[in-house]
Length: 92
Image (tube, rainbow, N blue to C red; front, side, top):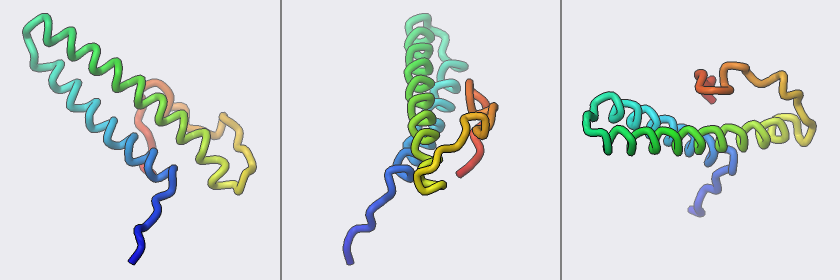
């Protein structure tokens, strides 16, 4: 009845999913606010979440090839181009 130990890659994927949901909420909030201060706050929130999303995605890409290939590296060209700047990320 011990605790199940999650793989670090699974934790990163979960954080990426949570960040994606938060980013969608931040865009929704930006679309509905009208006060200049709230618009500015929404822009900063979106910017911070995009930076976090990029960081988590980069961490996953760095760890995933090693996890799949048992330590062998995979060419960066093998990563989907759409996963770069704001494109859809393939579900894991």
